[in-house]
Length: 242
Image (cartoon, rainbow, N blue to C red; front, side, top):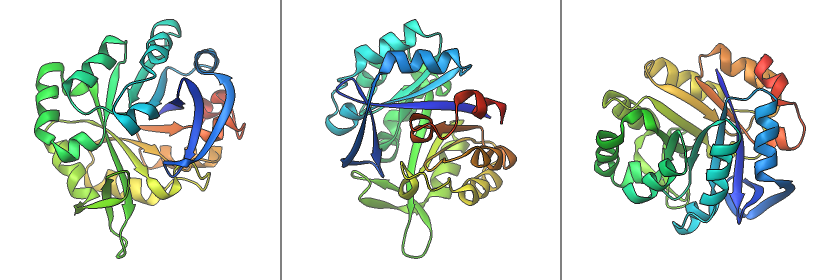
């Protein structure tokens, strides 16, 4: 299981949001490049970067920071935020990103994502499926700033993209994101059982080392860890040892 330390960026600053809410932002007084170097020195091989300015406005305001991290740390970078088409995707590739995270575009315009995959290879794409449970408890992908739920169940969406050759999926339980409430291990186990060929990265809620052991046990391909590392719940070294 790959450990992805996460750095979220607004205006070049390291931040964390609760449940993706820009009104519930915590700022951390640490330089993003220094933090990435610290994670690399601790043994991490991958880093998950989110350009929250890009996610909000579509303009990649943190591209220069992302490029420096990709070129100066030795980390393989998975990054996204505001990828609305080929132009944004290619800018991130040019910045040295190994895999580009695509979220809403995959739901709104899957043909555009298929075209990107045909040009650059699906191995350069991580599809982000941010989901929450509806009133009946069925998880569905959320769009429109996480306010609207798609009609298709998350399982169907994941299975459909997997059948088309996409391999890497970042699945976030929105209601656990940034909350340190523990990941939704049951959801990831269900997805693994239904779509065994999908490499699923768990995101949202990791609070302790026991969470990592539980995710490894159900076959998660990766885990994205943000707030727990920033707040010293455990170290990257300890996470890698799990």
